[in-house]
Amino acid sequence: MRIGVTGASGQLGMATVRHLLSRASASDIVAITRTPDKLAGYSSQGVTVRAGDFNDAVGLGKAFSGVERLLIIPGSDLTPNVRPVQHRTAIQAAMSAGVDHIIYVSSIGARPGLSDGIMETHFASEQALITSGATWTLLRMSIYAETLLNGAKQALSTHTYSALRGAPAAYIVRDDLAAAAAGLLTTKGHEGITYHASGPASLTAPQIADIIARVARTTVQFSAMTVGQLESVFANIGLPPVVANAVSRFQQALQAGAFDVVTGDVERLSGRPAESVENFLSRNLGESNANTGHA
Image 1 (cartoon, rainbow, N blue to C red):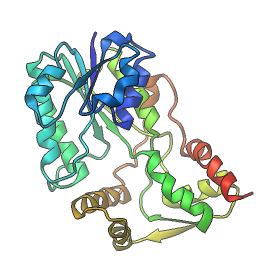
Image 2: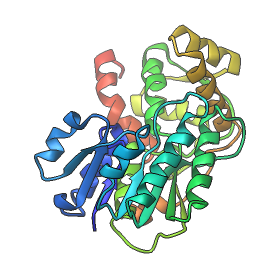
Image 3: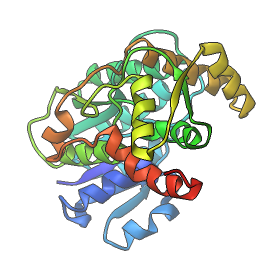
């Protein structure tokens, strides 16, 4: 069975290919990317690397040739109305190329709404796949644990962890999502199923502050941010308004409980338990903690 992965030079794509190499022959893996040169390391291991761009239907058709099971990792362009069009193009190209089964990486909490939000574009893409006539599976992911790192590292020096106050979220480590995707791609029986890839526990922002304090063995206070303060941060770091608006609405969805979902799907698909936020931060803050001299 030939397995294709779009966005294969991105962080999730590369991790998924790495996990696939432990489950399937390299000759059965097709890594599809706009930048094939970035995958020379995988190419040297026998993985087939092909150029493919969501904005080029003809090129995608060629890239998908001979692929039986395809993982579509969403594009990164958050401009209104772009991603659903790109994903419909990929779905149609895959069907025309004879792909048997299409898996789309979506988001827990995907929902209808305005056309310029992350959750809304995932929902539109899900609907495009479900109504396409293709055999499909949805792999809905929770929010990445990696999004906590910058705030956690800042908390080591300021002793304050700032975030929106609201509902808890079951943060997932990117590598766990990749392992789940690889398991899904290499096993049978997933047709028409929606999986929810979450971390092992749902945590509030104050609980995350406590975890940072515990793993760093220091004091950390939680400071609640308002949406306005969050958007000011985005403006100060120079995020384009379109991106800032999309990310702000994404954070507000988190605040409202969109990611307060815990399942065992990661372990069911990958064969290993999902990593906890505490273990993830302990691994990633260890060096930072040593460098700042915290006891």
